Image (spheres, rainbow, N blue to C red):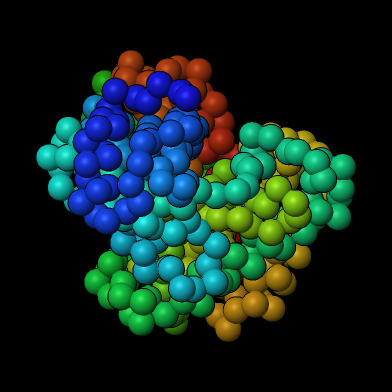
Length: 344
């Protein structure tokens, strides 16, 4: 049994679970799980049931509790759909239970993250690795097909004007980095060109739906026995917007050329589906028009590049590691190079 983080009070957790009518008994087989964020993930067993507890870090950030409750809401709404995602078992919105933090309990995922390890049979089968990309698109198409109003997510986001807001919103974010001491400003070739192209070529018609908001390989858990997606994880950036931006995000981050290292062991192993194959797979599974798929990929490059540049700016100000800042700046330049290649 791993010693739980001090941010998780097991006695308080047991008492709260009793109040929820969950199976009683001692908390056993405790293990802290790694994740893509600073949030705490704790696997444990109680009363013959396995749970994963998710809460914010020991030192809560200003919006952590709100984000966790939003995650729980979208995951609860997806229960009963065919979207592969953890299922929420109970939610605690009472900050008095766990030292100021909200938390929720969800089902464990039997799967692995292909950006950190690649077990058999995946490592030894190019056919399985190729199919993993198709399955990633299939899971995304399933999410995009969910009627967000029917599952209770009306008001979860602000879809009206969603596409129109994107370029001004992220140019403003980039401009804000200039307030950080020592940051010389963005040195991103093609920035203005890409921004103008996005504004000039914005799709006129689109259909709102549930967006994951950060859809890439690191946020997917794959089945240990085959290419299927066991679960889409880390829903912190989810909203109601244009689901095709999720597809653009996957395309923008998909291993290609010198970007293969981003996908870790899976990218290094190779044999993955091509960009065109991913687009064709989505088209075969979705009723959404892909006439403007290039636009969504460019927007993803633009938005993600600006997000990553924030760490570069903070590194100049001494608020982030310089090596990490330099690495992410290089990724930003790569994303804008890809965007310029698409826009001509």
